[in-house]
Length: 355
Ligand SMILES: Cc1cc2nc3c(=O)[nH]c(=O)nc-3n(C[C@H](O)[C@H](O)[C@H](O)COP(=O)(O)OP(=O)(O)OC[C@H]3O[C@@H](n4cnc5c(N)ncnc54)[C@H](O)[C@@H]3O)c2cc1C
Image (tube, rainbow, N blue to C red; front, top):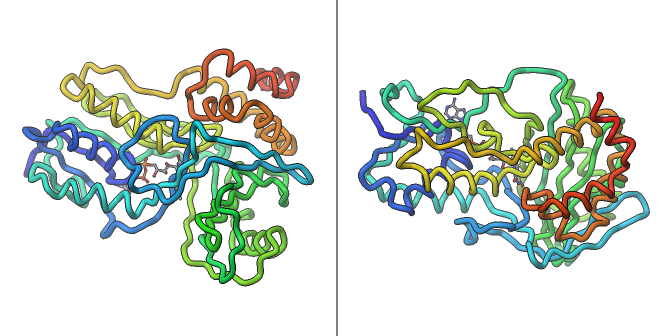
C-alpha cells in the first residue's frame, strides 16, 4: 500500500485550507500528501462569514463585504459600523473550486475516500474529523438558513442584521440573522443556542417562513438555496498522539461563545505551514486560554439564564463596535476585554463562576 509524508483526514474547510497553504508555500514540492475525503463531489454547502480581522487566502471567494450592521431586541435596534474590520461571507462552492483546481496541479497530492486505502503508519496526520461523544448536557449552535430572491427591490444590501432577538425564544436563546447580498437576495437564518435534547426547535421551515412573512413583511419570494448545520459549543475530545494534530472544529478552532471558526482555521493553517519542517516538536496552536475561560463563564450564564441573553448580547454591542469585534475575533487587549466585561451584569457573571 502507498505511503505518504502527510495525511489530511477530511477535505473540508480545515483540511483543504491547510493543503492550500502548504501548496502555495511550496511545502509539497518534495513531500507527498494524501487527503482522505468521503464525499463524491464538492458543491456549495456552507456560507462562512466573519469579521476580517486578519488576512486570508480567499478574498476572491467572498460573496459580499459589509461595513454596517444591526443588532436588535424587541423595540430596540442598535446600528453599528465595522469599517475597520468588514464582515465577509465566503461562498464554500468557490472556495472548494479554487483549492481543488490548485491542488490538481501537484502530482504529490492524492485524494482517497478511506484511510484504509493507504498505509498511514509512518505518516504525519492532520485530522479534521471530530470525535463527538453523545452527551445531552452539551450546548450547540444549530441553525438553518435559506437564500431567497425577491422580484422587486426589498433589502438594503449595505447593512446586515447580525442578531434579531425579536422572535420566540421557547425558553432557549434564539435569533435570526440576515445577510442581504443584493437588493433582491438575502440569506436568512434561524439560529438556536441550547442543548439539542430533542428535535423540538428544528421546525426550521415554519420558523423561517413566519419570520419572512410576519417580521420582514415580505410575501413574494422564492427560496434558491438552503443550508443547515450544528456547531458544537464545546471542545471535541481527542487523544494526544505524537504523529497527529487535530485541525478545524476537531482541533478546537471554534470560538465557543460565537461559533466563529473559519478565520481561526486560516490562522492555524498558516501556523502549521510555518512550522511544518519541525512539526513533531511544535507546540499546540490554540485559542488563547483567556477566551476559553471567558467563553466558559459566558456559556454558563447562557445555560442558566437563557431569558437574559438577548439583553446581554444587546448590551455587549453598546461598546465600541471595533472593541466588540476584536473581542469576538480573539484580537482584543486587556483594556478592551475589561470594557466588555463591565457591560455585563456583574452579579450574574460572578455567580456563574460557582455553578
Ligand atoms: C452550515 C454551516 C455554516 C457555518 N457557518 C460558519 C460561519 O459563517 N462562520 C464561521 O466562522 N464558521 C461557520 N461554521 C463553522 C465552521 O467554520 C465550519 O463547520 C467549518 O466547515 C469547519 O471546518 P472543518 O474542516 O473542521 O469541518 P468540515 O468543513 O465539516 O470538514 C470535515 C470534512 O471531513 C469529512 N469527513 C467526515 N467523516 C470523515 C471520515 N470518517 N474520514 C474522512 N473524512 C471525513 C467531511 O466530508 C468534511 O469534508 C459553519 C458550519 C456549518 C455546518
